[in-house]
Amino acid sequence: AIVITLGLVLMGALSFAGGTYIKDNVTDQLTAQKIAFAPVGSDGLPQDITKYGGTQVVNGAQAKVFADDYIEAHVQASIRGAEKANPSLAGVTTYSGVSTASRANPDSEELSALVQTVFRGEMLRASLLNSWGWWTFGVILFWIGIGAFALGGLIAASVIFVLSPAGKKALRAKLATDKAVLRDRVAKAEGNDRPSTDRPSAGSGGNAVNKD
Image 1 (tube, rainbow, N blue to C red):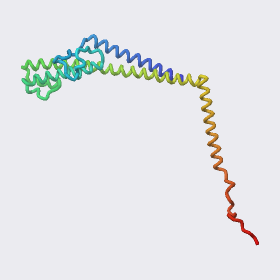
Image 2: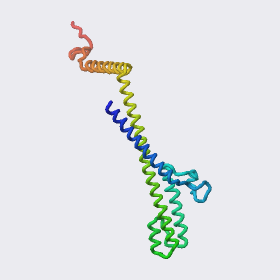
Image 3: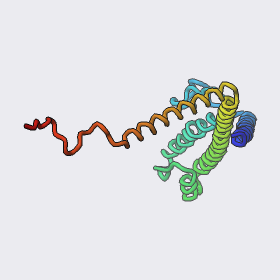
Image 4: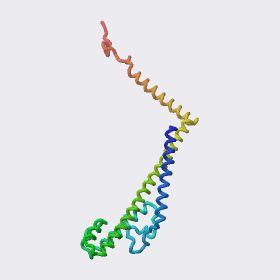
């Protein structure tokens, strides 16, 4: 039990420290980039993420929302806006599709500019999703550390209780109770195995026969 407790405490310390380091590192990098959502009420902020309006991206959860619900929305809006003058963009939703359309129309400055816009958007989106992945990994490590600490503490408390006078007394009482139960079961089993002496013999009748 002591070895298990020490192992859990060590694992908890390493997981907690590792998770905290990863989370802090992601936060520092995102904070330095000064990425923020558009202000509340502006046309650039999608309606389904208005609660993030004006918020700076400083953690993995916010980075994922910015990547999937903000950048992606603007990229798709840019493609759909250019589709009116460029029918070849019909149904296109990715950078590779926009690049293909641009190569098919090399003289189109609008398509060339769109390629750069979509490329930058997708690169930033990939970077933010990478930050979100590391952040999530850090959060998992953090809670593994907390769980290991808690389990180690529980085992340590159990050992201390068992070794304490109160624990020893409770253990002796439990053993005494178990022995008493076992004796009762053995006695009942032996009683059932004994032949009964109250049964009438095979030759005896229920009533005595009177002789003349």
